[in-house]
Image 1: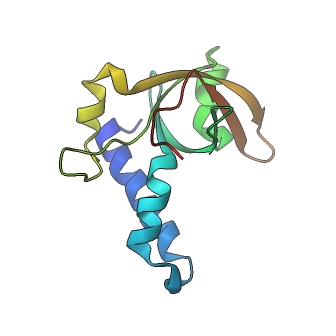
Image 2 (image 1 turned 90 degrees about the horizontal axis):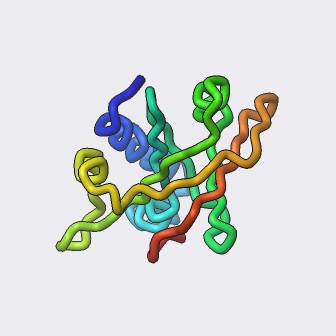
Length: 133
């Protein structure tokens, strides 16, 4: 299991790699700022994972099935999602400790769809914070 702090760093690195894979005309920093509000960190009993908000109105997040599979096999369907926040200077907070010490940042939800063959899982959240896109 990966602790939350390295997981946020991994999620940020994954976003940077994804941004780098796109045509350079889009601008990496600009793209990162655009997609960061859609990224979520999932907290589970024994591990963490990442996903992306795909429908803000319906509060649906997508992730890989293998991210939630361990929890589902242990009888759990609940998820805890954390959306990134900005500090007073407007910079994205990437320190997982910031979030784990502030339960108001944790959004409850549940896995509502799982397709192991396509490695896809969908979760429905209780709410979506303002600014999430």
